[in-house]
Length: 267
Image (tube, rainbow, N blue to C red):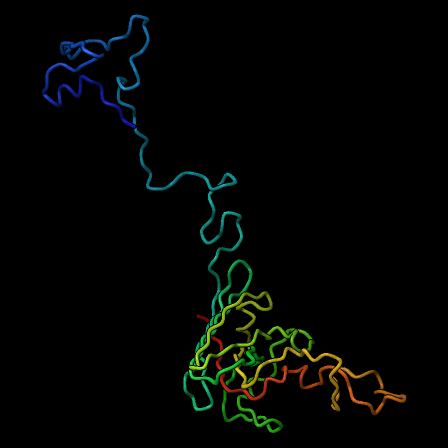
């Protein structure tokens, strides 16, 4: 803080004497008079010292960041990538080409934050996945299931896996009775650049809930499993019902037809 001596204040105010002490008045000092000292020869009190020289402003904060050095732009104080990173988005459309929602993904601190919002869909839980090709053609119908958007391919998976361990497997989307729904979650299963590869990636909403292949062994079925025993089953139980999820369940969680699709593009 800059301090101004009493002499300068007296000249500025054009006033008479300045009071020093409880009731003692002093006469103005000549301009060239030396600054007074007390009887012990000590310097005047801090308020009576001469002007201090202010540091020359540089327009920048020179204070170092924690750790001893300023943080580079775009990073946090630990030097890791900052909160904002790569991002992508998709518009979801139904088989008639009507917009029914949006999807977005943004990288934050090495993970992907996913947000989806939908309107005009049937109430209830819906399977919600990323698929391996960025194509959404409602006229591309799967001959086996009659589902549209078949050209989006199977669930996104960077290595061989069964549902719900595909990279593109996500939590079910809950839609209310008015047809609206919103969900947001964080995942480390994929990064934005992985969704923007040469094949692209599609977002698919299905008509039914995704059971996440949660079929306990107490339930039996007559179909095949995704990974039967080598050489097939032999012995007395060869024709008995199978246990647990079947091959279809391990592919998509029995979530049914694809009712909305969107291709992911960089935002």
